[in-house]
Length: 264
Image: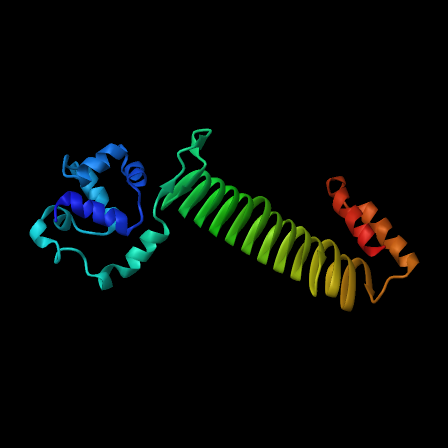
């Protein structure tokens, strides 16, 4: 079997068209056709790229007598083969703003990108960065992942963002098992205004155990200005609203208004 025949065989086994393979290798489709027909011979760097892409040795490609023995044993390359098939590079020919509409590969960069390292308007990968990012480690305007950092929305095991939700969450509005935020909701909630079983707030806290300037608790309440266990009466609601208006700074007026609606 010649080098060209081997390239053709590997290409077909891996479900590539000549056009797709030429795009990956950076050559014309006619070049692939000439290689497979033994009219022309690939350059050394192209042979190396082919061996990496199809997980085979250069000896296998170059030496006919080593056709059966020089290829790696399937048992030795199984995991690598599965990974390469999963992240086999694909790229759209159509571009927008100089980026392919979609790109799939180890290091993917496109409008829609999928890969181990993905960057794009929509990015999905082990490490993802984009307007909308989904990944183990994700960074974006809207971010979803195990470790998630989102400018506006962040959801993940560890989430940081203006709006954040996760086992551990921190943000302007945050909710989670452990939550830190200006407005914080969680099993353990810490912030300026906190609500949860254990709530610790600077200005307001409500929960089973509450500690803040204004503390509303079911079991225990520790408040420096006001504390109450159980439901508030209409008179107490008026008192709490007055305390909030007198003590909360103007830049948090939006949060104060939300809490006043909450207790009404």
